Length: 151
Image (tube, rainbow, N blue to C red; front, side, top):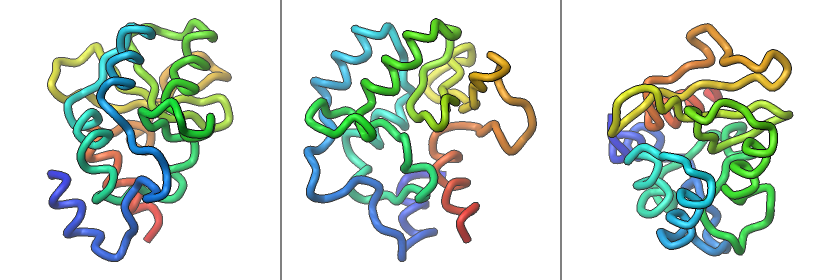
């Protein structure tokens, strides 16, 4: 599946990123990568820099999702997600992009690039949640499932 496929599959959904906010940008994204020693898959980078103004995201998924712009409020800022995760000293092979109630949605960087699976790191158990409902093949698959869950 591609971003174009998502746009076609969910034509009635609004784009992920609010039009009235400062857009994610490459400079800040690169700063975050260096500061937090993290790796993002190509699809996430493309979404942040190209497709967030076109492709939708599920309402629940939007909560706690981090966008790469330091002018955004903390609840929308990717750095807040990365900082909170780093302070807890969770596994470095996971790169978070969303948090909710202390749990983190992460890219599992133990897989090979350009795309990696997404998992949920549970802060209560300090482990990756198991089960097919908590694991996605890649970022585009995650976006798709977040919208499917709302229909």
